[in-house]
Length: 85
Image (cartoon, rainbow, N blue to C red; front, top):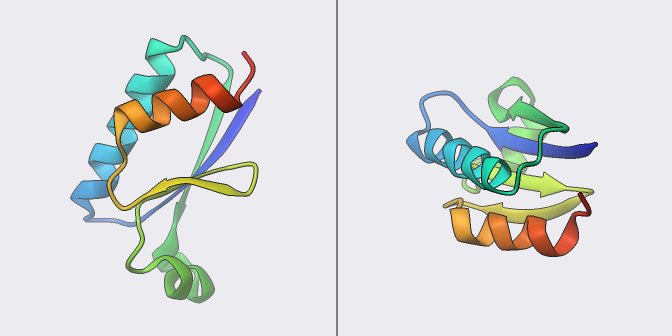
């Protein structure tokens, strides 16, 4: 199973667009067994402090895959290179 964490917040157009880009990459690669944990940084002061100006942030196995503007091509290439099917 592929497990990833997506740090986000409400009323964040970049977060909404980023989620779409991630889902497109997962669909294109035909990854069906995926657990995507969406974490609202506004519910935790420490997360808000760490990620306030960085969201959205996609994390896989403790590593930041991409932050700010989530790009389909970058996420696709990362998953293809770093994640076994």
